[in-house]
Image (cartoon, rainbow, N blue to C red):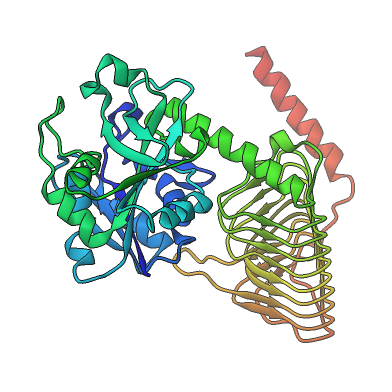
Length: 449
């Protein structure tokens, strides 16, 4: 049966003290919203509906960055969670299947947990995700007997006995889509906050003779992010989990506590990560590659046997083939380095193609930007680019060609040719002594006032 997702992302997050919508604050290099969307994506949903509100335009862009096919609806007034889910009615009209309601500020729900909720749907009309809380605080309480759920009570409306319960509500709900919206229609505002609570659908379902059930997950999965402190805690929790998974999968990390992963980082078995390596989104490191200390990588691919760093930066579009060496203080952006290329140090390669076994000397720069447009540099196989070469794009250097150190290359270099583009050196014998004597005299005169 098809599954649909409704992800609530309309809240302002006033306790974040920020102009940025709460769900756009980042954990592991991406918005919180992307974490919820990724968890739901494991269910292969037939449709994803994101409910935006505060900062809707920015939320829409972020949602479609992750899933261009998702539909975003806007909750103009924030009147409660049931009202928010109700905004997705038109987007799901006429569709048959189960609907899972997720929250854009709850990043750690596991796909396995959502699958367990779908499995429980075969036994219950409505399924709610709960957790045993160490400190229940102001969470809504689940009144249940085993798997059977009787009702959900918000803390504001709970009796003292109900507040003593430790089984708490995560807010995540699963129900047949038609049933869900039918139950929402019956939700009222007879509560302390005067809002339309999604939690009320359980009692309404029970009053109609429908069964409700609860699936219990670890409390850590239900961590919501409402403050900067909780955002920092969520980042720490993600990194702790990601590091443990990397080690378990055969990645060597000499100082795991200093390595920071993004949500989608992929690192192969027997790869080596040095201290203080930072991954942005979109990075794949193949088995056997090594990333040395103090490197920053985003949007790039590093093949087997390549080594990077220390102190290197790989930006989006960097593609390193097998056995490529990128050394210290090298930056690569939107460039393809074929097998065996060596870029030892102090170099910028942007918008470039570099052929196999080519050596790039220290201080080389592809001058790719003319102030308006970007241009590409193409370097052939087995070329030797001398230190301090400026390659003014668009320009091509042929196979087995060479550039002299300190050259500014503005025209194509044929295969097997040497290109020199520097001024002729002029030597003035004895002039250095005369020059320094003059400078010292000027300095002494100024000291006398």
